[in-house]
Amino acid sequence: MSENRTLYYMLELSLNCVDDLISLHDKEYRIIWANESFCRFTGKALEEIKGMYCYDILLCGRGGKDSCPHYNILRDGRSKSFESNFLQKKNCFLVSASPVYDKNEKLLTTIHIAKDITLIKEMERTVRDLKDFSQEILENLPFGVLQYDDNYRLIYENAGAREILGVPEGKISIMLNCDIRELPEKQRNIVVSVYEKTLKGERISAEIEYTSLYNRHLFLQVNTIPVYEKERISGVLMILHDVTKQKKIEEEKKRIQDELFQLAKIESIGKLTGGIAHDFNNILTVINGNLDFLREHLKDAGEDIKDSLYEVRRAAERATSLTSQLLAFSRRQIYRPRVLDLNNVIRNLERMLVRLIGENINLKTELNPALKKIKADHMQLEQIIINLVTNSRDAMPDGGTLIIKTDNEKLEDNFKKEYPFVVPGEYVLLSVQDNGCGMAEEIKTHIFEPFFTTKEIGRGTGLGLAVVYGIVKQNRGFIFIDSEINKGTVVRIYLPVTSESEEVDEDTDVIAPENFYGDETILVVEDEESVRKFIVRTLKSAGYRVFEAHNAGSAIEMVQGISRPVDLLLSDVVLPDSNGRVLAEGLKKAGRIRNVLYMSGYTQNIIAKQGVVDEGIELINKPFTTIELLTKVRNTIKG
Image (cartoon, rainbow, N blue to C red; front, side, top):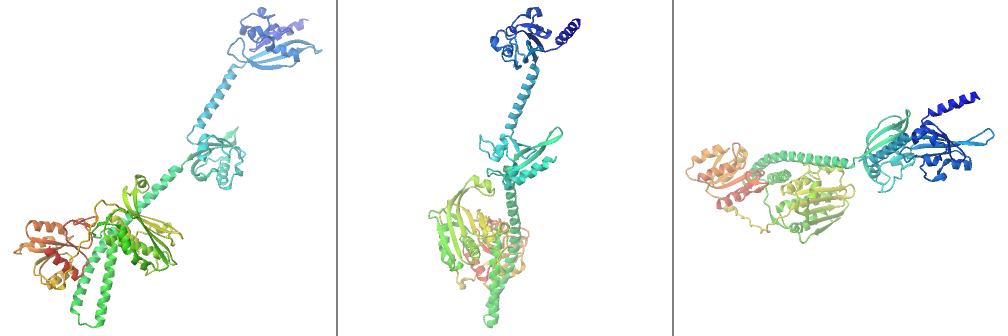
């Protein structure tokens, strides 16, 4: 008996050392014993607690015996476990209630153990809140997050990923919970490759081109991280940044840079060709002048000599045409613009164009009857149309259709965004379209370069489009070419609209040969000796009294020795020590000259702006013939 007492005492001591609330109950639900933790929690002594109903002391009478686990134990004989808070306190307890039987399986009592799990619950709530918070952050990240398990399945995607991939709002991706090895080939190859490398421990950072299952063509910056669980890789985390817009901006920037580079290259070539054409014009002036001299003095020569002179003349004319094209390309061609209707220019050319293209090509014109006026050189416009039509003809050796259109166009600011060199405003559109062989992209980058041609030897100089480009730019216009292999080419030219009224053609004075002669005083200022000699000889042969100088300084000195004012100053525009205009203005101010006629091989801002000769300026273009020189001199002196 003493041994049982000792065991009872030791058991009581042990239960009193436990923090859990422990109590024993009889069959009537009354407490027959409770440990010290139970007493401390309720604030009552053991003697007070004994005999009280458990639901009265712990649940403060809430629910009565129906809410008491001991009632349910006595009813069905099974242990119960539940969570509860007692005495209306915030503490949360995990309650276990179990029956106690004797060796004959007779119910003796029930034991009630309540473990305070408040801290655990708070930790669980914190973890849950953190998880919710993390989920909220993930869902609102400005980039995509995908998580895969180690069995090729996508197990998570955030809102950013759904937006990038084009998943409709409020839907989940059709890739979620799918085996990525079962995706269509164009998606599978990229995703699986990146996934498998990461699953081996690699961290991937790459830009990929990707077409989503929702047919969105994307450029993605992809970064992957292996997901570890207990020191083994259990999955893959994939971060997606949509860089499609940046990629397009970079491509557009490169396109603009390429265009600017091409424009700069063409400008450089233009300066070079302009200088070459200037030198050639001087040479051709001498050739033409001496040819005229020879023809005049060899009238009685044999047919062989006359034929030879004729061939030299033809060669000189071809060379003159070539230099004229070079000047047009380099925008140094002198021209006289006037207000005109582009439709009229096309109608006047139409019959000639039909003969030019041949019978196997159908020419159509679609001209806007309400077309606005432009200010341009009539001859230059004809040159543009003929060059474009010739190119289209050569692109359709087996025949086809050629369409010339005109229309009014207003280029807005959004057009300038795509083409920065375009000035917004009102334009007249000239479009030449064919359904010929077209051209490749690499060809298009060179088409405005002089002497570049895809035609066989002998079928073109390679100056056609270069000339068109130069004329368009000289007229403050823009040119665009769209072309596809085996589909054809469309050339669109925009020329600025003018508000000025259409002009009437002026009659050019035609002088009979017998009126070429005169006895006036002429001062010739030209630094190129061979050109100067030809001019002086020609003028002297026509009866004029001629003085010559090789620069402005010697011209001024020479004028001082002439007793009366010079009737005509015939001066080159560009001189080694000055320019013709400065020389002329100085001599006019001093009362030493009456009239001025300038000579030039190409336009200079000295007497012209953007190729347009200043008002009141008399100019003869190099190269010129003897008759052209004498006619212009006579008309200028006559005023």
